[in-house]
Amino acid sequence: MSGIIRVYKRDDEGVLHFREGWFDEDYSQFVMNYGVVGHQSKTEETDVADAAAVEGLMDAFAVQCAEDGFGEIPDEDQFWVVAQFALKTKEGTDRDRYLEEKAKDALISHLAWRGLGTVERSEFSDYKLNIFCLCPDMNKAVSAIKVCSRGEDLDFTKLSIGAAPFNDPDNFKLKHSAKPANTFSL
Image 1 (cartoon, rainbow, N blue to C red):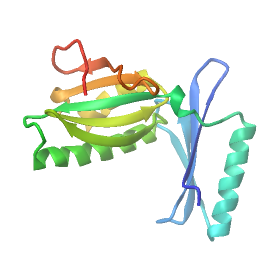
Image 2: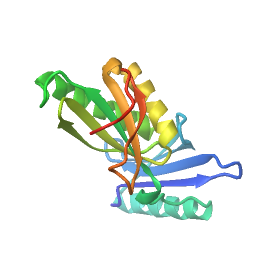
Image 3: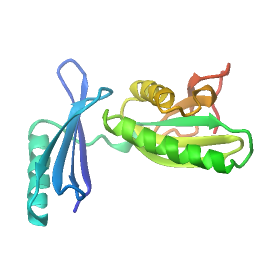
Image 4: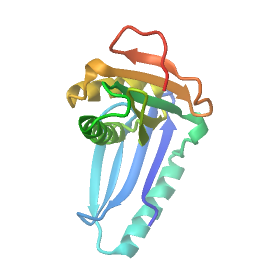
């Protein structure tokens, strides 16, 4: 089973669209999620009888996406967008670990349903919680992270967001800060 198929395509106006397909084992359904990157997606589910049917649907979905001009975006054409929360302690407390799980879960869902990328990892560093997201559209991802942080009550007043090209992870630029700041550091 190949997990998830996630592909993108720019239309004639340069607008980035996405399609995703996966098998939801809990409901025994093939799920297709699609839309304009940065906007809430549409979803269609198809009931699946068995594993062979799942493979057939995944294969057909992949073929249709390719025929429609959709393809994967290589990592090197994407951006690292880091949601960073200021902490009161150097290593983080139990409350901060709760924030980490809550923030990761919220961002995974918020970004995915808008075709804005994936949460790749999180880490605690010197008085900071960093959540690393791999995103095809940096500006829309930054906006979405701010909206998600406010909507999910994720300590928005302690949020900074930095972004860097995938191939230049040592060159983060500050894209948002709740506090006056000019630089972003991990």
